[in-house]
Image (cartoon, rainbow, N blue to C red; front, side):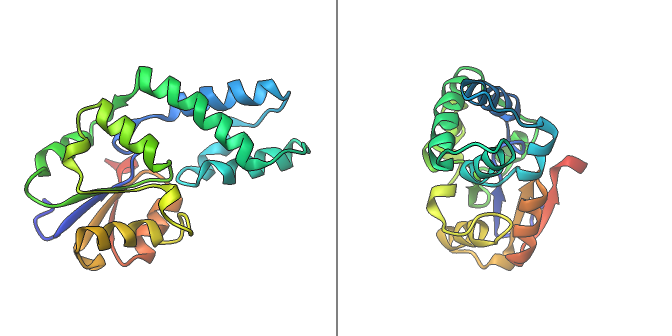
Length: 188
């Protein structure tokens, strides 16, 4: 099915790992500490963005004075504990396993690299990927194509010979901007 591609690139959260419930729970816990709130349905629009970007929006909406990087760090610490206890693979992990050893594969995620490595290792699939590009590995985040272009570069594959698997609008835009074909996993 993907034979025409020289490499496969996967988003992580919501694509190969079911991490969204833990992310929502972590935000709820951290925001409660400060008496802040945020509509969970609005968070979906920021899927694929680095945590600090969503923290900026939450802080502004709550008219709160706080460094978004501090709030993001607190959320990341909370989610790490939750995820490492309860991470689950989504059905698309079967594609990862089926193509392991047949094509080089990478993960291009809006999560920090250390979190991605820990989660993929916890599920026993870290060794399936030749490259991992996290939010802290790039200066421009999705919908900018840098994440996926960096994956292709690390795999030594031309962008137009890559296919990306994504579940978020920002990620779909990033893959297309990189000149890559993309599968919207929400439609599978």
